[in-house]
Image (tube, rainbow, N blue to C red; front, side):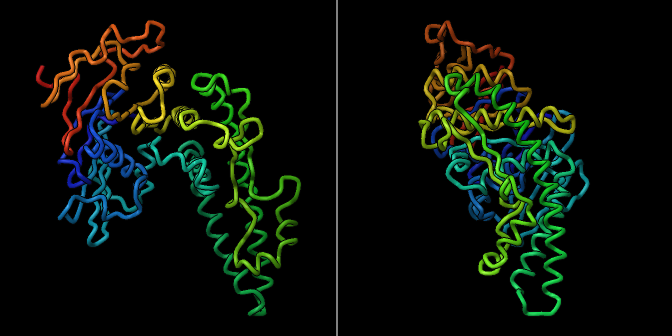
Length: 398
């Protein structure tokens, strides 16, 4: 799917928006603080029920306002909307006018993938960030995973409660045995589904690394860690660590401890790559997941890339431009200056209220060896200033 129209009310520093997107490429140019990231955040919030920038919902509403609205119409003419009152905490979700009560119902209708400066947490934020990345993809690709994961978490909570009880009751030992059996069985099921999905990600990742980091592709490996030693049964590991778990008060091994490690020459990838190379790897990984999601008929992903110019030199942006052409999804990209978008265009005239860029990316600046094949009819360009978003190409006045 793609987003045809976005409507926002009282969201961040954005003026009330009612804008139409292109089904392929959409570029947003503006200064820092103009509202570019807020635009991406609005779409992300609709798809995930949370922000990628803050955990404080009250930070998302305009100054002196108590509620905000984010709504889209997709290419199937389906209307998805969410409103949130930050004073009462009430959330109102509607799909084609019908009221819903779970945020997960929105995620079933819109799949948002994003790369931002915060995405580097995938390397530095610990296993939790990598688990979140993999599981978000699995939600869209493995339709039964959400139910399986909920069952696992329910059993995990019960087992942890029994561990904390210790020997305080006569039934605690038998209860711990019961929940441990359930825990081990569900851990194995979750681990198997994750292993299959991670294997698919790794295979697809090779394709995108060949485009974005061809010199490093053969040196990159991905290590899958299921959450307990590979050569041991989980029940055996738990039995050997009864005393340790009792001292900590929770389960130390199981599917909730899953991790993937990205290695270059068998060393942590983030310690070996430059910041720009790390960003290209994040993009390749995100593209791999987006491609898997696109293969599922239920929903196609929407890709958000914030501040495309940061960390990426012109050669990297040329490689990225070529790679994006291979993705079957809608793309929204932000940039501070139009010049950094040069590899994505052949020729572009941009006009805003203050300046006229007569072919700021003109034919004399285009590298003849560039692989960019983006056609003029395949994109829209918007200018973002003080929360206002104006279409620059094609010019709405035409």
